[in-house]
Length: 469
Image (cartoon, rainbow, N blue to C red):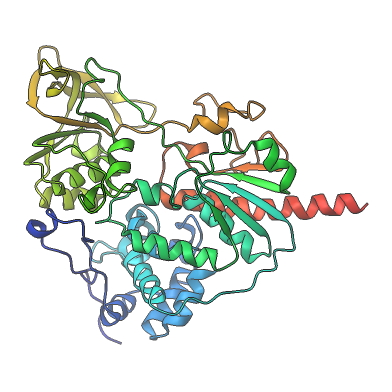
């Protein structure tokens, strides 16, 4: 057996000075040969910690072994038992904090962990190039409505279809995919990949109805009358602002609006698509998560001369994926650490001209476990800007919740659902994803979707048995 490499097999990427001017995918993917080389690094642990580190419990050693043995069909079959969205997860899942973090190879000081996410993407991309197989689903076990077509809803729908249910997804927007479509930029997650994986779920018999706003177009009462159970996965995409002076100025965006314009409405393809995004010279993005990275990197690609991220803590506390941070630095994004905006300055005509900021220092840890940022008196300074984008989180979608008052909410305004079963206060209504947890990762939303599918199946079959008695 060949000696294992200490480091991961590198994945080719677009050069930073080229990619920061286009929206093409940054990471170019493994070749089959590169994938087999990386797969050979796996130790094939019997009690593999990477499996329990994965929110959807993929048989990671199993699919990696199949890659090494050049059996891509088997590798995809294994992945398909656990996930409906492998090409998406292989790109945006934070593997470094989950499966790869507990990889036994990586626990050694000498070795890097196996590149599990890159291998998942390899298999999924290979599968997307194969003819799409349509599997007959009679849908005779019961009818289920899924509200929202983001990663959690798609997972639930796909799993229930495999179990033999007639599933209909209702999506408020004109394109399915939820945050996968409106939130994540093309250079990180191409629209064609999202479209193809959704087509795979539709091929299992799932129906998707777009432009349906539950609570407006149809009511929850109508859904509960027509279906045996319902899964609420409407996400948490409502804009959230700090509320500082000048927030209403022209040029101040929420990350939700900015990224929706760029992604869902194809602003990045203007003028082919007539969705203009404000031409910017100096852009300031407030926040330190992946959404902040996406907004900043998008602004750079749209032609901004200077793009800065303002973050009130230090690099050590930055919540964004390390890979996204490094990519942003390579692409010319600048950082103001330990900094927070306190006012947006008017140019005299209702437009943003600058952002007034203060410098911070870190105090004792807060409820998040991170050190609390404290304002340094007299530290105000000005950053010139014609565009500011606040990426400080999103709130719960209120359209459905406001029209369904019987549903219990928690103190943060999200749906109160059981962590282990996704059951809500209404029998037959289940919920998961960001509308329960608040903004989180794609893979955690998928994990909730898998739990919900199992519990919905149990609920419907139990209810049918009770009706027969």
